[in-house]
Amino acid sequence: MTNGEKRPMLEADGISKWFGGNAVLNDLSFAIRPGEVVGLIGPNGAGKTTVFNVISGFYRTRTGSIKFDGTDISRLSPEAICRLGLCRTFQITRPFSNISVTKNVMIGALNREGSVRKAEKKAEEVLEFVRLYDRRNLLGRNLTIADRKRLEIARGLATSPKLFLLDEVMAGLNPAEVQEMIKLVRQIAERGIALFVIEHIMAVIMGLSHRIIVLNHGEKIAEGEPAQIASDKEVIKAYLGEEYLIAQG
Amino acid sequence: MKPLIDRPGSRPWLKVVPWIVVLALCVLPLIIRNDFYLDALILIFLWGAYAGAWNILAGYAGMMSLGHSAFFGIGAYTSTLLLLRFGLSPWIGMLAGGLFASTIGLILGVICFRLRSHYFALATLAFGEVGYICAVNFRSLTGGSEGLALPIRPDALLFSFAGKLPYVYIGLFLFLAVIAISYAIEHSRLGYYLTAFRENENAARALGVRTGRVRLIAMVLSSFISAVMGTFYAQYVVFIDPSSVMRIQISVQVALFAIVGGIGTTLGPAIGAMIFVPIAMLLRAEMGTSLPGLHMIIYGVILVLVLLYMPQGIGPKLKEKIPFLRSP
Image (tube, rainbow over all chains, first blue to last red; front, side, top):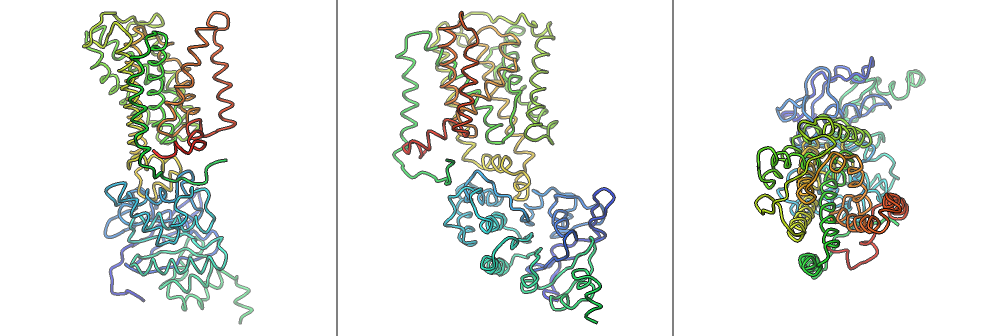
């Protein structure tokens, strides 16, 4: 495994989440090391976004613990967790609609910067980096889907995360935009920011990740390097059904 | 057409314009000798500042309060009672009322922690009504519906003056102070955080904004200033009763001024007051006997027209139409 020698920065140990009588996550454990890119995949309803919501503080885990940089974050609020350096994007983008793109990003930047002026400078740097700079004066609501996804990323990056959770940043993009986005995600990883990525497009996640965690019905059914995952029987069954395996012999 | 672009201005000479306006406002009362117009100025300043206070909470933080009459009333009653019972100067009473109102605001904010938009508006509406009922029924304290008359003994230390001019300048000071506070909030970290909270709370939290704290700060600031304006009203009018300082219509009116002027903008509430106060005064003076309450109908018509044709308010519309205004 890559970065095997480093201590994990995020350790989820036996987390679970119930909605009413349904276990959406059940006794899930995993770890992410600094600088690592980890993919999180699974069929619809597997609980991927729930994992993000639990880690980022929007949901409380019912059992177990979540440690980030040695701190137990399982009882902290989303804002406190973000301040520790763990930021997330939303699958359904949530731009601040009535303010400019720059101001959107400044709100993230104010997290670390001492003054509004410095935050503005930082925001402009980040916008440059995600290639949204020429749209900086548009209002949040006037962006296209692709640009909204970029804005989500820009805002998160502006908070200077050590671990960045990306929730389906490629969904709804056309093939050209997907290529652009892959490039961007790679560049973020090159900056040394650890990434935890939910993605539906298999080719993308296989190419990006150092390691992949597969979720089904709220449980981890496989974990390993992309090549290992691609040939894993459990994974194929979860995605394509038992009949497919039988037909393949 | 809604503006597509939110562009910061770049004409430095325009920075002089606000100062010219301020200077003009300072000189204006000296030129006007007519008590009726001075009265209009005072009421414009009073309502402009009060609407500005409402706007901090409703405009920037997006928490539509319909109970702001209670804070206004708390200010008026606190300073007045301290004066009547203990002879305490209303200058100090103004501060005491502000602190009392912001404490109540803080408690209300904590209680309504989970309430959003309509539900928050309903809760504050009930809160305002509770304030009114208290003022009517705690007769031993507030004098009930008969109200409280303040002594007329001109004394600067007791916030009491013979002519209207001192009130004009105190009003002007408060009016400009609220605009300055709004401007400062809008350009500070707090303003950005309030906007983020208003636009999307979860997104704000994901970016590290302590939304719970930020909204309470807005609550405290807004209720403090509202109470200060209540004291100013009491000292100027020298008579308060539940229906003049605690009535639900006051809450509605203050919201109306800010919404029509331009909610969530620095100058919107002031613009609203400049439009509505003169209309109300003129109609009351001209038609007060033949058609009392006509101004309420006119208010309604203006509100409907503004919401139809410039839903963001008159202030932003002016900015859009007159490029000259677009900078500061």
